Length: 236
Image (cartoon, rainbow, N blue to C red; front, top):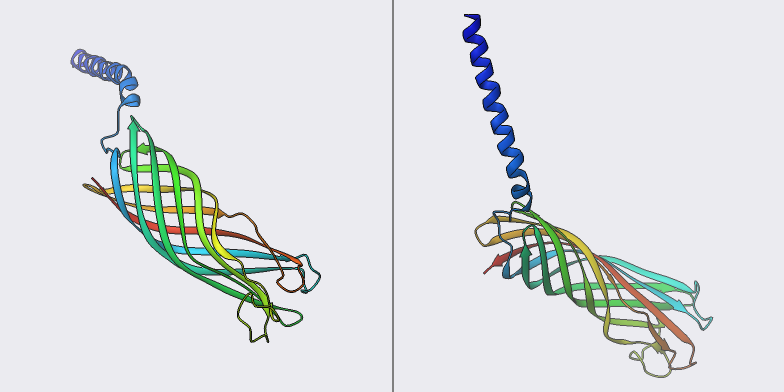
């Protein structure tokens, strides 16, 4: 009986040793293998989320108290996305563009009787993405150019004139800013051709500088935003 048990134990040990050797031999191939889920190709989809916008106004003309006023507000955003991925084993690189509609509109009343207003109705980004695929999950960082419209104003609260008219309004610059966008996200392939993601972006837009239409004094606005959004993509 002892001889039989010893023989069985020896055979099991040899079998386990063989399986361990096979796993060691296959380990490099497993590490270099391409994940079963492919992220390569063209995709498009939609996004929705929230954004914390900030517009810091600075008065260089010694008119407003305090000299720096920051408008902050949280609002929703909804938009569309299109992009293309390249994949080398687990490394994924891509180019993505998006556009979103939002509704940021904040006004702060200063002294003496002044209204500092900031508005943004849309933003867009064009970014590169670099990530690592683990099965059906993609972890990535992203960065590129950001574009956003702005409508800022600094004027007396009691003036009947329209923005920019002599006699009441100080300065009301508007247009499109071009800045930087950086962020990170996680995307999961949930079904064939369909994925879902959560993404954070920081938009840093350049200063807008203008002068008072009456006194010629200088003013500036520094605009930025923190964007948290969810999205779904269809992969062709």
